[in-house]
Image 1 (tube, helix red, strand yellow):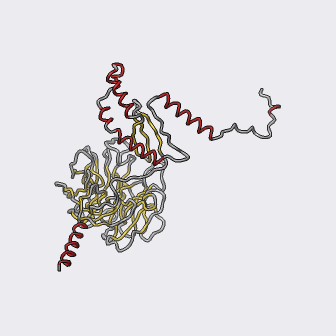
Image 2: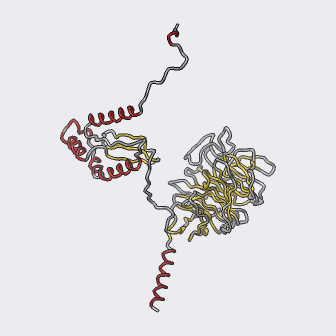
Image 3: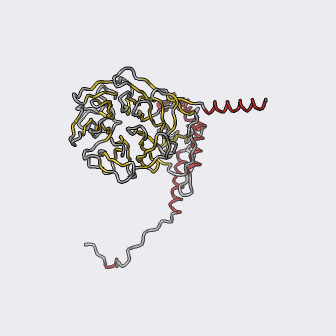
Length: 435
């Protein structure tokens, strides 16, 4: 009896540990389901699904690659997304119920980003620079769910596209500025455009700043992102009158990637470190609390061994520190002994002619000496190789430092056994004459 109770208790504790969750930091690229009941999003490189009110999220994909920009099919059965499983972003599609593995639809060596499913649900509309024009803009392409070669969706350049509810029109973005540029005003601004059923194009917005990310609320109105109020916020555009109404009023940072559900019930978007929802009629937006497993798939701090690519060595003006780059990260270390540093700092106190060098921060930096030294030793031991070795040279005396460095350089050159190249064969230099 006691053993049975103990086993039950252990099982209960195990379930409690498994159920431990945290609020997802920095969930991205929200996409409401067609009925507005759920939101697909990207977090830690995978796709997740959460109720539109927030709560416990369920994982859709589990792959080391980065997967983002989910879009729903009109019937809510499928999700298309971008993944770099094979290098650059390609378009993939999978069932929401995860009954099948994701299927790859695009295969170009440039990034492809899904925008929408076609109205008949048989293909995915995506943007790509696979046929880059002289204007460097993206184009819109269509690829069938059954596979095959993608076809150009329209002649006009464009991206961030969405089909109207009746499937007759396509809203999209044209412009020359990157979406990350803040406060741009000018001829290269991003604008909303409309392609009608008869293949005619109409410009929907005339704002001299950026308008982005259109998605249809209903047959006559579009949710979109605009910087016309200063920081980028969500607006609602009446396609018949061109009147734009501001729906969100965030400040500090910009709103990112708004998208409306197909039934027009909610608009989801990124702001700061979370996903928010707002009604297409306006009102107070809500920040979602999204719960995910507390056990992350990667350690927050990783220790790596690097055997090459240490470069860009730079010495600080006071010759106390050296900075260098290893695989894109900057490391800083001391290059004189701790006793020598003490003598130099003391000299700046005692000698009036050296007091101009004094900084109160020197004393705080001196406390970090051992940490600098350890970091330096770790990097040197990890990156020094036989063909490209590091040399540790004492720098307490500049003349000795220079001598050692020169000696190492001379020794390396001599070991290369360099020789003067031979003269070209077949040339009689005795007969040559310069006139």
